[in-house]
Image (cartoon, rainbow, N blue to C red):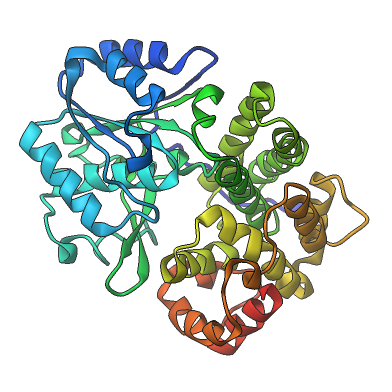
Length: 390
């Protein structure tokens, strides 16, 4: 007798993804169509003075109310609150975010802070959990939100999620904050923009996309839509990241990698969750300032190894999608990371063994840890994973 499975796919509050034309042309048309009059441009300090930022400012034209370029890696709370204050003072009616995941996450949080009147840490941290939220349901206040157009420079795919990470630098902890209306309204993808990101950071962000797809494909709560997009993402990333490593100006490979990054997050609408690699990556990033792309390089193989006793069949799908069905998923991922000359061990980025206990002690702060296929129940469990990664 055939069994009938239950499940869902939730459509988030994104309205469109644009690609195939120059980013400034697409942005100018988008702002005109939206009727936006006071745009706040958000970016990181390293974008200041670059030709890409100048082109964006020209495209925005007299709609540009101001630029905030103080958004640092791992999205420190201080920068978010300062930018939100500026958005309020300017009366901004739209946000344009140029950068990687930290800048785009910051833009989501800025929109939340402006709408909710948040001007202090206690108004944001631990107040907007993602658990139990249906992000496909727009609240009655949805019309009053400042929305965002995201122009990603990396493959981390933060522009395709309705939640964001924010770091309390004083505590060295990262918090996840979510709201359905934090989702980008529009995403503009132009591979030429990614040339402005350093090669190492860009390739590492590609492994972050591998992490999104691999953890969801290896999850025990499978869904056919999730499986399809994750497989395709892994196939594309394993093909195109080495091409970019070989020729950093290969725009076709960069665009195809952007598409793969999009696919790597598309399965989130099915409710299939990522696991310990993401959770520990948040902790490691906040603890040691390591970019999330690199945390995935370091942690994902170890997590796959630790989980293999409970999801080996699912992990075989990961290996096959990476074109390496004759070896374990952990080794297939490690080989891909090594092929693009990125680090594969915690010791390679300066983490000493004595730090592992402290990192493990912080790990249960991240609620994502409880979504791992193999239950992570104690700090000793976390230390086992970290030892595998060290």
